[in-house]
Amino acid sequence: MLNSSMLARCPTCRNTFSTDHAGRQNCPVCGKPLVVPEPAAPTAEVLSGGPGEPPPPAGTPWERRAELGFVNGWMQTVQQALFEPARLFASARLDRASAQVGFAVLTASVFGGIGQVLGLLFRGQSQAFVDRLLAQQEMPDGIRQMLHSTQRMSTPGMTLLGLLLFPLVNFVLAYLNAGVTHGFALLLGQSRRGFSATFAACAYAWAPLVLLAVPGCGAPVAIVWLIVLTGIGLKECHGIKPAGAASAVLAPYVLLCCLGCLGGGVLVSTLRNMMQGMPQ
Image 1: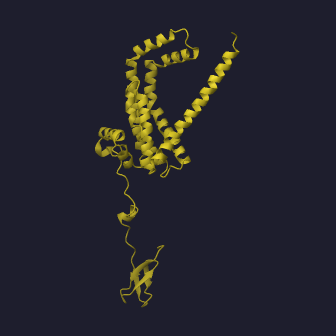
Image 2: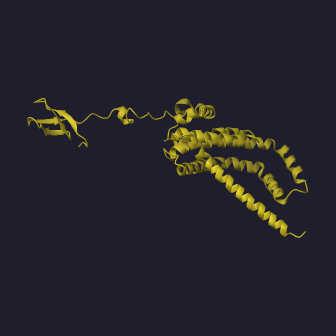
Image 3: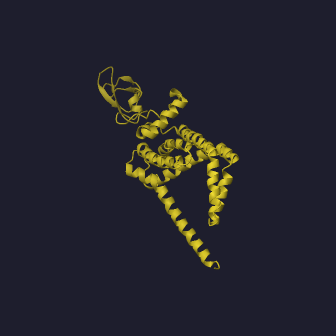
């Protein structure tokens, strides 16, 4: 049974009439019995949403790694993310979350691990610098304890433990980052295509984490680049304006900065009161 009417032609009287169902029936003009065939199956154009709807994205190189090769797919994805981000995010599929989180976890874990190992090689130089700082008598106790804690964490055993936990930690961080970003996108009315679009943008924005392999300056540069790429990704994946994408990306960091300033102010005030209460 059809929900809309269709045209049929009687083979006897050759008259055309409208009917709301297929199968055996009588011609309303001559009364002769006839059989109205079922309508033809929808064409590929109809199934894809009609002539006005764009075809689905082809997928990023990483999502097509079965045909491109694992390493080649990853390398092309990183290259596009760093130098052709609009092209990459426009080609991302919104039904490939498992592949996208795999790209993020793989990139952050491998290159973060390389950075940890290289950091051990330069541990002697950094250790001498920390020792010179600890030798200063006027250093506050809080900073001294923090440096001691850093020394205890910078051991081969702790580095190995970090390498083993990297994939799990990065997996959690990938979803946490996307969840927070999507929450602010919802609050600001910048989520047109759901969480899957936000997750694709956030996952491929982790491509600059290859810079984690560079000890020292690699991490801050990678984080700034990641934030920029997340904004571009939201714009392309959700189809929103640049200002809306930027506001959704920067809002969590602005809130975190405000909370940090507030906490720092409370801490400074507390320390000042404690020092005023100490005997001279």
